[in-house]
Image 1 (cartoon, rainbow, N blue to C red):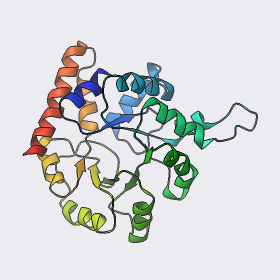
Image 2: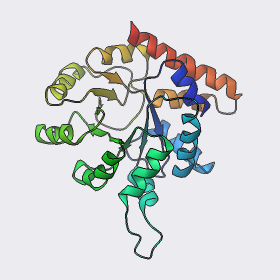
Image 3: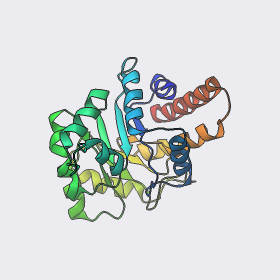
Length: 244
């Protein structure tokens, strides 16, 4: 909670609040280790929503819940023997907690209509991922079904720190923007203020995850104030680069 509030205070325009999962197939080693630590310490989706509720009492920064389908699916099931899926239950729980959007990494767009009407009904944006390998027809479908913004994966592969922005980023983001009415946010591999500034020359926003999670990991066992301060400084450096 303290990290989210500090990030918002130091300039973050929106927050991705990750829900830990035991098999995070889209994530690299940094976020995998973070998920393992969180699960060992008892973090659950219900706990994430409770924390979000506390955040909402102090900040109105937009928050997108970022995770894998299994925890969301479990939240939406009833207790009966058939375990029926109720998308309204999921959407209502996320909305009541204060989420502005949800990004389910492993939910293909063909299955998005399973949850999207319920999310639309409560004003919860369903964020869609597109990648360098997304063909034009599928990109058109993503642009039609997406809400809030399109999340453009800047590299093929998993999340993680990279040493440079992909050389073809400008052309690929331009191609996405030409087919979509939605803003385009670039993520996966953006890890320094310089990279954020380069990506923002072409996109409408930049998402930085692994670099911040790695910073948190490097402060494991240190006083919380030191961690929160370092994270705030990092967010401020990213914001400063984008402002310039």
